[in-house]
Amino acid sequence: MENSNNILEVRNLEINFKTYAGTVKAIRDVSFDLHRGETLAIVGESGSGKSVTTRAIMGLLANNAVVANGTIEYKNQDLLKLSNRQMEQLRSVDIAEIFQDPMTSLDPTMKIGKQIAEPLIAHKGTKPAKAREEALKMMEAVGITNAEERINDYPHQFSGGMRQRIVIAIALINHPDILIADEPTTALDVTIQAQILNLMKKLQERINTSIIFITHDLGVVAGMADRVAVMYAGKIVEYGTAEEIFYNPQHPYTWGLLESMPTLDTNAKYLPSIPGTPPDLLTPPVGDAFAPRNKYALAIDLKKQPPFFEVSNTHYAATWLLDPRAPKVVPPAAISKRQHQYEFERQQILAQERTQHRSEEEV
Image (cartoon, rainbow, N blue to C red; front, side, top):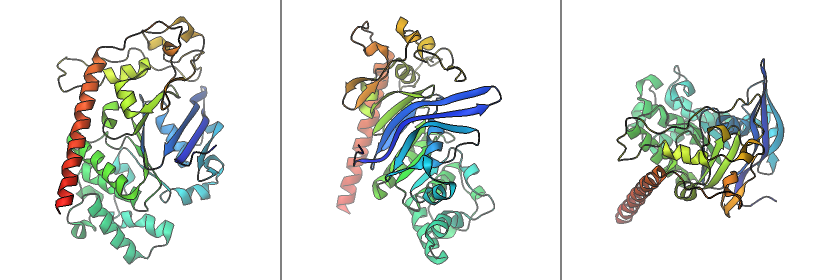
């Protein structure tokens, strides 16, 4: 039954890729919901299936991709059954995406004002003069100063951080229901990264859009996400609220991701890393795909995939360690440092929001 709070429902999604070497089973029975107005972060190493999942939502899968099973429900319609023409009408209006590298998303020969206004003209039939006016407003909203003067500039005349703001403006100009942000800050330095994340959060509150945030770095989503889904080898292995994932992680893979996050007091020469490499999905393992890299693996992990165990009514993890018969395992001590950092960052964000709220009230 559809939950009225859900804007998107992905169920039992399976996607294969036909290659010369054989069939790669890239997405293996993935299910999740996106709530209205929330930010859902999907995290995991490269190759875990994060981007393939969102490409399926956007209808932008490669030609050799085959959807073997599943549904993607949006406004009582299965996106997987829509034609290319119908998906083109949805893209940029109802569902938009921000990509990792802004230079590959922007036309270097076109003025940025025209690029921001283009979705309004192409998808909503807005008159050019009105579209330009809306583009100016959006430029100001994303923090591009002197918008009237810069609207006729070209992408190469902007810094990397400003180009990413332009890409965000293009994605949000039509106030989409869903915004997919695929590693949108990876190419930026940490200072600009923080500014872009803060900007996205503010704009989300303004237009009430729902965000799917794709990243390999749990630290990036510490103050950004409402809920987190952890992916490994084409499957979701743990999901819950951001607080649950940071304060009470249950899957050994999540532990590994948290351990590899630097903290404010990190002074070691090398950060801990997860040993080994992800499995070859031409021949997915019979049991838990993470077992060969998991020092806490049980004998059953090599024989049978674990089901999801309920930690709370919002927190689930697919690990045999949660089976009542399993031995009790204490998470690595390094995770507590990450939890302290997360709490520090969270309190900083709350303090900033309180200060901003007081300033707005005074105005």
